[in-house]
Image (cartoon, rainbow, N blue to C red; front, side, top):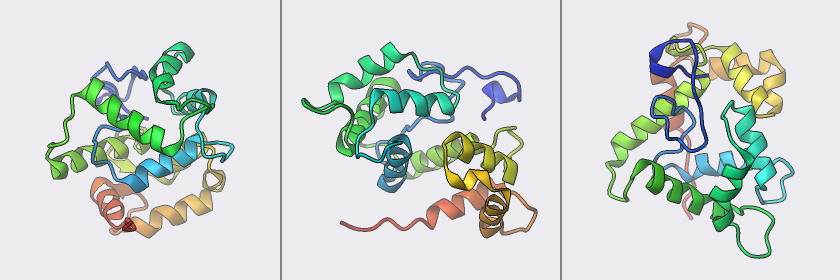
Length: 191
């Protein structure tokens, strides 16, 4: 899915995020759009019970190719699970996200949001750009959607329609600027 050091070869992924050369799935910004964080929560919550168990989190990270030791996952999230719960609620997941940002990346609340959003978009783009060529093809999108267990990943026709809906230059793939434009069009409902 991503390339370490810019080559299409091997990559070293880990839950802890201590390897700075591999960061395509890190949720790095405290200002990360709540809609995107909620989507991630919903994808990880396989049984749709409103909680992410340690098993569900481990499974989701594994599907994304992240090396995650069950003991490491449990010790990392256990303090964020509320007494009486079997997993993380969305609020707990948000708190864990903020906590991991502070611990692993040293982010504070006064981060330049525009620069950080650009960095987040670049990291998200790398998740989909599996071969590192600077474009998301229908096949690459299908692979990621399938790994996440999403129904859209099963039908290449649907994936091709998704690509064409944001492909402004009609080359059959999505470049970073098209991806960025698509992400900026996501409407965040006010509370």
